Image 1 (tube, rainbow, N blue to C red):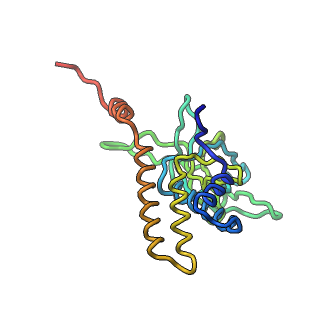
Image 2: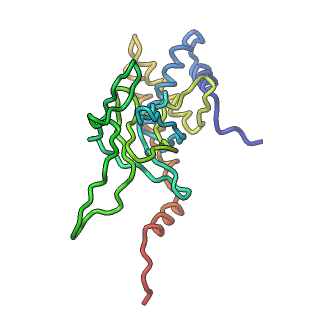
Image 3: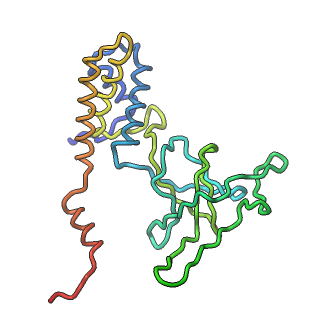
Length: 235
């Protein structure tokens, strides 16, 4: 029978402890290092990201970032079975006005006012202006949306990859996680720099293998070329 291609986070941690001969009393520390490894893998070394439907707060035209949000891949709306991405505009006003302790939008100071598309005429004029815009309000961990009806929003984002101890972790990350933990463990006092350097190199090599594993196949590359090509008359 084929083996599963995922393990729970807690089993990954137990595996790291068992395979590396660590004392079970180090579980908490190893658990945190495994989380750190997953965060780094998702931020820098894998193409995997999360897609979710999100709600817009109609009082403030904002979307709260998920707890595991690390970075944006796209923000869009469904259109004919595909995702139509929103246009980023960092000049949007992100402030809100408090009324009786409730956040609201005051149009007299530009809050929530629908942005009109800038039109240009003549040679090399731009076309296809978007109807929806967004910007980030990093201090409040949310997006500010601007448009005539900012509903049905789809968010693609880089996740920390961890929700709880039962989070499913792809086994293709296993070597990266193990070597990352060994690397960081050898940086604890008393520091063993020789071992730390060795396991850091092993970690970097396992990361390169992961990236190679996730590279597109030749068929996928060929298909992408065909999609971008323009048909012409064959002479």
